Image (cartoon, rainbow, N blue to C red; front, side, top):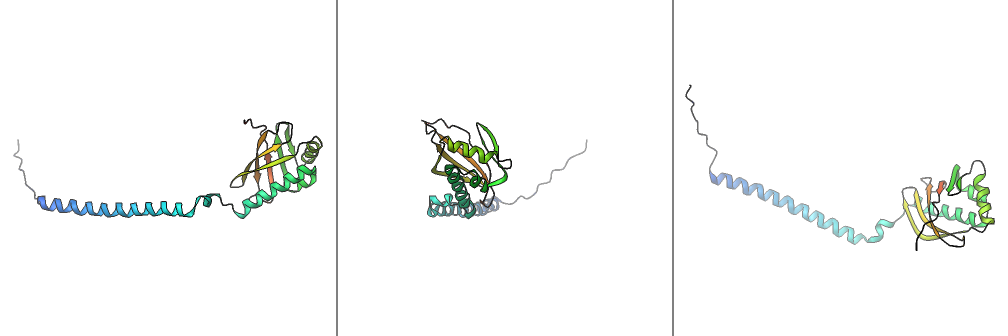
Length: 173
């Protein structure tokens, strides 16, 4: 068996290792302090900007609400043609009664029939807008005044409604 020779290597003194550790610790301490200050600054900026910063609507989203209000006004007037004007030509209204398309004239006739039967819409002030989808709770005067959430899928510029979905009714106390 061959003799194995052990060679001692100098790994430095204990003082060098301690200095290196302290140097690295200082670097991490500075990085941590900078990150901590950045987080505190971000939180302060969010608080200073106020709660309503997240509720600001774009001009297109404001237009979506105006277009929906025009649609509701046409519905309440029994004017199916005016309601169709703010709808996409291939758009539709979907509710528990079925799907009523603009293109074949069913949408206008359906709204006129509902108006004749006494089904006006009253829109709540609570409106949620995410991208080009608008959710609002409408109330129909159908004897029970049961709220129903309506979902409006809009053109991105807010000028037309692609479709309206009325999952009816919303059972709330």
